[in-house]
Image (cartoon, rainbow, N blue to C red; front, side, top):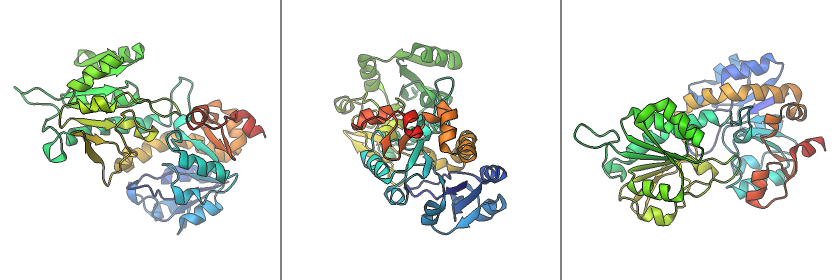
Length: 372
């Protein structure tokens, strides 16, 4: 199979779909790989590194999309890239379709086979291709929030960990999953006063087992969220519903009543965000102030630490890339129900129930779609 990897064109997105080591594995399996020149610049890899791994270097993205049977990316295809996809071509990347009707419409009309990293599952009910980026984003959320609390960034002028004689910042994390756990790890390490809210009591137990009495946990109710958000200096939103748009857990009215100069970091923004006042921002212009509250809502946070993120992502995507290339997508999906859960769009049909429900499309069972 011919595998193609274009450069990412989303604003300040430096990650790469495959690293040279992964390319070498694909070539070892008998596949051909074409890479757009400069693919690895943001992760410290040169064109020669990719050549040495067996890839052919092409000058333009249109060649990648025109020639490849399987296109590997990181972020959702931008408008220009969606126009280059062709019917029956397989795209493997993050999609986050539920809050993005324009992208969904383009992918349906283009007829490609689109497999989303974020809805591939595992035997434990987890999302293994989303987890490493959630780890990165969870840790980055605290770094970003700490900076936003500084006065020059619009914040309250509060040091996250305080100093002797001065209380630390109060950090509230909504969602105790992978994002929340990693955010708590960083915030506690910096000495903050940390509270995590979640509706899964076992998740809260696991956090207490890991972090001990230094962490506070609360069962998430509307009242608990209101009380904690109003008392917080920094609120981190990390709530996820697989494939679906994130629930709005903090209303605009609640944001209006927050402390002036407090900070919201919405890690769920690539699924629409869990704060009512959230709108997607970029690394070029990451924050805005609304109701005297600083909002950090960058939709591709891990792109800022591209080398760490790319290698972490490749560790989990490579087995699936090889399965798709070795077997062809139909057999690979038939043999692996977890990979099948990643199928969101198949030649004009929506095959992810959550996306269909959120955007008002008819849902087609993925098994029936690939059997047709």
